[in-house]
Length: 220
Image 1 (cartoon, rainbow, N blue to C red):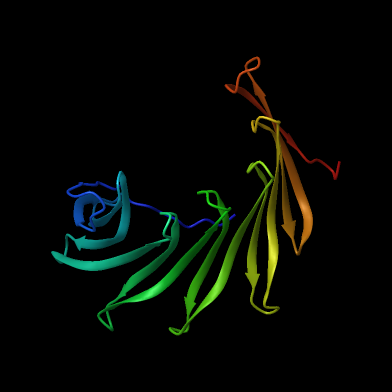
Image 2 (cartoon, rainbow, N blue to C red):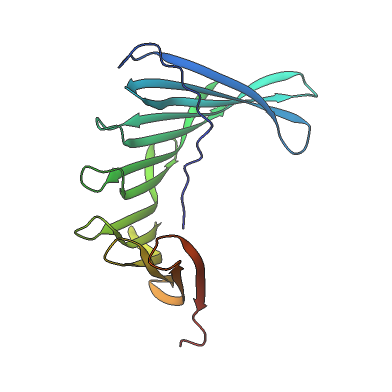
């Protein structure tokens, strides 16, 4: 399962309704080795009343030994007209060219006019020239909009096709409460393992109190 959407904390300041004002929030955070500091910056664009949307995010690295601050990564965010996230482009700093170079791109589609993700495509930048498929998540929903199947695939370069890595089937009750899930792990498009989660709730409520996990053993 491959999901690459690391979002940084967002601080939003509203000045004018439906304005396109950009505001910046930056902060220093020390990493674990205590040698460098990473400077994270966020610019948010106020696009709709009550909504703050990330326009771009960047990071810089400060090396204590050299006392120098250098560029790190840069992320650009794009949205559909309804506010759903359409795409994130990840770039990393190339010191030789003194510019940001493409690295990873995530593109999303949605189920009908909702914020439920239909597909999530991850691509990588290769040969400094083109985007190449990497991973794909595809979700299926029933007539009531409840999630029923999630399929995770990776791109096989030699064959130029998608290869299934994992599938999760969701079984919902009539009110949409999750009853159970069954997960399948694949190798060369053949199931090699599976597990099942059974959800129990308190009485007739939707308050979860237990998840029972069952694992596939000896193909049974």
